[in-house]
Length: 368
Ligand code: NAD
Image (tube, rainbow, N blue to C red; front, side, top):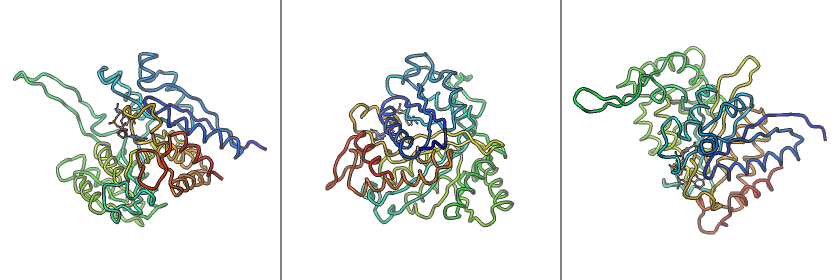
């Protein structure tokens, strides 16, 4: 067999169930290397609490530079009660924030898809969620999570004051809006932009810049503006009205978690964080499931690996230009669900409960 492609992928399994779900991705990569004449070069290292335990820091410079040199970073999850009382700068989550910030991963893509086989796992009525397929594009490196000044300081009357600053520049808004419009072109040509322009100047700027960009470059796409609180309500009332939603860091954090629950389980939803393309059309990117390290089920074999496997599918699509392999993987997941295999989190009557590793093996057995 002729080897045709050599691609560098950095795996950062992290903490809790992270290593368990990343293990299933490793199996898939090995399958692709063996059966599809691909040549993925896998490197694996520490990030999060496990890195703090070994090196006293949530991510070492060495790992950070490996991430810079990889075509795609696949992360499991970080954090857990063991590290809850650490200083903010040492917390496992700092690894994620550093990677997102320093790799300039400004666009977080979170699809919320309701698999037809799992309609009953949602807390909403089947007719509201059946066939749901929306994409939330969250700005990831700006806004109130990074704005200065920030901190907690004493004030005159003996009280303390907590300060965070919500700030966006035109270019930060435009680059993420472009990602949303470009995605909409490949989907249903519809973008909803969310902010709080009624009470926040940064929200007013957001709305104006998105509209101006639309009028200049994306006239053929339907653009709606919606206040973020209304969007939260509409996501529950009639989620299928949306195709692509673009919003800032804070509102995106909340709206994407809310959208994820429309689909029934955190264990099913992938995400991609993308940076800008360079001259050669290559971009930095990190892929991860949206769930956390689930310490309550770590080590029990109950973790659902599908979110992480579909995150790898997004890496195939967005970083590695392997749309066919991505589709193959998505189809394999669908077939396994059609066959009635379920991890504990999505188990229902009449189906067969399987472990993390059995789910991974079943998906591999359906790859073509
Ligand atoms: P969580 O997502 O880890 O778990 C929430 C609930 O969902 C738990 O009951 C868990 O068992 C279940 N769950 C999550 N993923 C699952 C999967 N793949 N299969 C089956 N069930 C799954 O959120 P949490 O409990 O709020 O946080 C736990 C730790 O994870 C915290 O330390 C938190 O800071 C961290 N966290 C990390 C990330 C990340 O690494 N990106 C994201 C969120 C939370």
